[in-house]
Length: 336
Image (cartoon, rainbow, N blue to C red):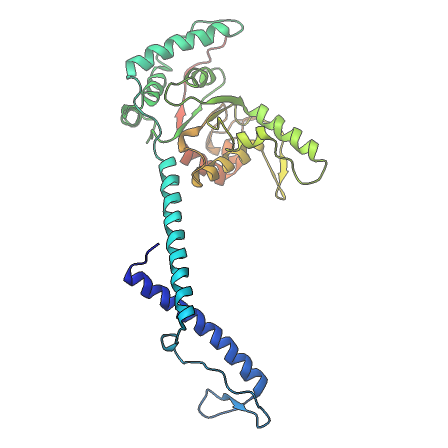
């Protein structure tokens, strides 16, 4: 790899500074072994004075790094080190570009809003038919706007962001996943179950209790030793294949686990680790979705239903906001 003239000059300057440091250490060692530290009027009160008994010659040590003279071998080594640094910088720039690209919107316009809406209505009824008991899926005044927003989202249509703001859902982003909050029986899970088969952004669906069970199994198998992290736990935390997931009924898990000396809920750990995976470029920003009956804000907490902030702590909830659009589904319960 060729260095530009300015890069070669910088490489040799670095080589001089490195050699200057080596010469300083050698000279200082010589002083300690061959000189006495005595009072002086000119050296800040103290100075090294050569002992009369010393026979060791004073080593070469220039006052400035720029005065250092490099041998031909040292010049070659300095230029090679400069080339290695340049290669390392190029590799770093490449990996940063890859990580940045991974965090960019991965959704693409594979279908129109109307096509996605038609598909979603058909899929929703198929999901409803498999329930026990089966029921008729309806789009009504309570879920219409959220249903249509999700259609725009999975069509990769910017109307998702524009209408989300206009309809009072707050700032939304096609880059993020979707977290749906609302009371029991409002239809949060069936919406996420429908759109998990999205042609643009498919994702898996797992309950928070399943996540907790896997953490419990791993902790039990550890028998007090270093915690075991099974492939399923790694998957939940953002590693492995099929990493885009929706976590259903978040806050329903009941067991805390000790992790790095602290007691945490499994979903708290999952949120933090998936955010870290996003920051490292190992996971797309949109790859985390969830549903929860529990509110986000402590001010909205109810008896027996604490907020996610109270359960998981502000750091985890801050990361949830960065990864997910916060969507609310209102209306009465749809359960009989």
